Length: 217
Image (cartoon, rainbow, N blue to C red):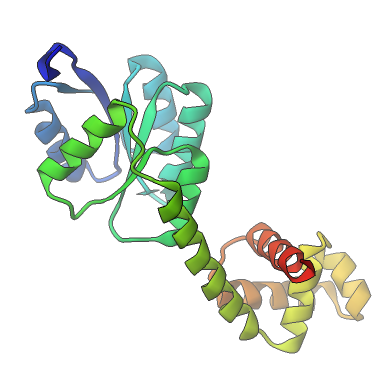
């Protein structure tokens, strides 16, 4: 069976219409690929994928203040036969690791040539995984090293609060433990999140817990 005998159905998620249409035109020019759906938001993507049954979903990592990785996670959960290929404007270890955890099969920079993107879509559609475990482990290692350096930059009180976050303590519990006001603790948490380059306290809590586990080994 030659390539033209099988036409892979492709879905696109990108909030920039010009970029999305450009990729769609390039894909539709291939005899073995067909764009069957498009979306500009995560919510729309999940809805459209359910109706168009693609073989591959090509998802922008950052979509209008949302995460294309969330779309990947939801699509893979509801439609495990749909392979996901993540597109990103720049190399990002955290996004690569998160994409792998969400079930993505590939992670490609937008700067690649058109033929390279088409080749990646074909490979993912055929069941290949472009996100190999070794690459993901290297990304995890770089994240861990940079994260540990960031923790060292925290003030003594911030490090103490960081440790309490890893134990799952709330701001109120930390305030009572350290004889501080809850508002003061909230400010400390905001500062340490900024220093760690994290958006949510749950990220800091999970990282603190992982560090504590390794130190106990």
